[in-house]
Length: 317
Image (cartoon, rainbow, N blue to C red; front, top):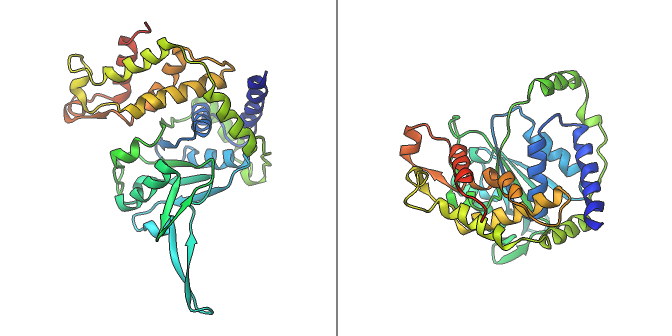
């Protein structure tokens, strides 16, 4: 009954987001899974597809602090985390914390900043803390980095380090709207999104409770085996997928599949995981963790195609 009560609240939350956002159902689902799993999400595709608007709208419907950082080539780590600020009146320096000290941190166009700025996020993402001079500050719970990036083929972008990629639970690809959604967007274009009142639906205590309920979701031994087989298929030197991979799925991929499948089961109003939950999140979990080699690029092999092959070959025992 408790699961259903919170599921109803989540449905109300999605309805609030739909006041502003047309379509993007998968993105909204992925944002919620990331939130409930206490991880981070990387969102990719071209500008103008409401990635940032969806995130900011979600933050308004939650009792969470929200901050936004626009990543640019001249951004410095001190712009993101902290800086020593001089006070003329007292002739002293004091430490000023920046946007990283928040619940929701939107790293907009993260791959437009060089690696020294991206690496400044690593400690916060991995350990939920930041080191400022000789002090360590624990970040608020929940703490989530929601990063957007443009396709790497665009000018003035930088590749994210593999170590940082692995700290994102999901990599979600935002697609263009379909024909029906395109018409609805045009009809709603005259609306002022700032004038639309988005109610707060979930509070911090609700989010923490949902996170606890998801942890208790039942996972059968066969599901553990299924996740293990999917991950190990990327490391098998004898199959057709391995020859296209430069990096294979890490143990964090197994953990991510497990956690996100539990959240997917919760969103489906179930207290147990089924194989379809794994399949529903497999691409988001794996597409940034299995890195293609030059042979795959030369043959125009897409990472999602390889994941489809893995899911087709691996069976539940």
